[in-house]
Image (tube, helix red, strand yellow):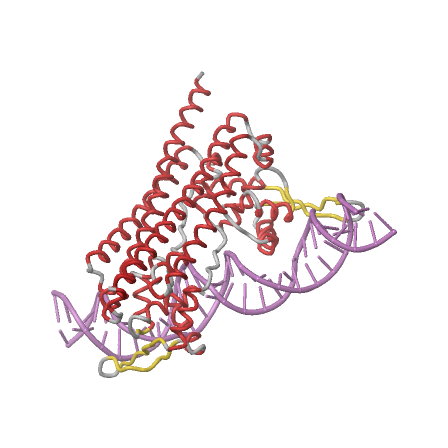
Length: 201
Length: 201
DNA sequence: CCAAACTAACTATGCTCATAGTTAGTTTGC
DNA sequence: GCAAACTAACTATGAGCATAGTTAGTTTGG
């Protein structure tokens, strides 16, 4: 159900086509909620059927046309209801920690590789998020800029602050994973050394 | 696909029925990978068809019977191959951070409630994980005890260490979420105060 | 001027997962 | 002695999601 609200969140800025939304999912919102276009198009249709958005054909080039969706009053009300409602947390499904729990079945080198890959993955994410957070702080983010233009000035501070704060949370998460995986590498070294001494002595 | 390997991980200890496995998913492995029984039973059948496990009927009480699965050599090889193979990370889908990014649409009180619920949720998880980590350290964990009985002594140290380390990672994650949400509460207070002074002044 | 890249909007298939319900035998506690 | 709780093993349905493929018009760069 979160996809629906991620879409509504974007449509509170301005009307967009499915394609526009899909692109936003590859950058801004996609940092917290990934969705491929094959999920976005049918969801928009369902949302239109539910009266949350309305689509209209707009011309595109000489012969082309595209379907642009805008949020309705019902959609806005639904979005705000979701904001107020308690969240339902998904049950834990954490392949990295699942694997880590049974690394005695892997060779030390495979175990190290697991942690190295974990570090690389989260460092890549971290860099992306740091860049996005910087763009928010410095006002370079075009999406945020457009959003602020359609927002009452007294809400500007909170709008910026919550976005910045969200990315701070994501960065903190990534850093926790990196620190854990680094300690994992140390653990593998320690265990290799102790099994070496057992075999050797 | 991780469900398959979570099941194989459990079956490296001893043969189990679907029901046994389902109970383990409510406690030990379930901390990193949740699965309802309705997923476990069909997966076991698929795994048997793939030759990873073998099931046999064993008597249960005077008239009852149950189907007990044990891991095959193929299953063990597949599990170890998974341990060595690189992981595929699931794309980010984080409803808590999605919502946080748009909290300017909520009332301050709803925003506070969001962060309070986040703290409660992760504190509950944290307590569970701390208790499990303690049980691993003190040797109170029955599941780990059984596993160690079926494990060569020279692998004991690594077996305990990786399990303990996994829970340390989960605890660190929970603590990061809690710290973030606490800062969220402070942020809401700060924003309320500044909008108050704007309205008031 | 034309190929390549991009914009636009899908459809199809199959796995994963949540939720709920069903059937039947066993053990435990009062 | 019997009800309640537990063990055991499913089935059914529908949503969510990944992956891949399709069709067609538009813009851009050499």
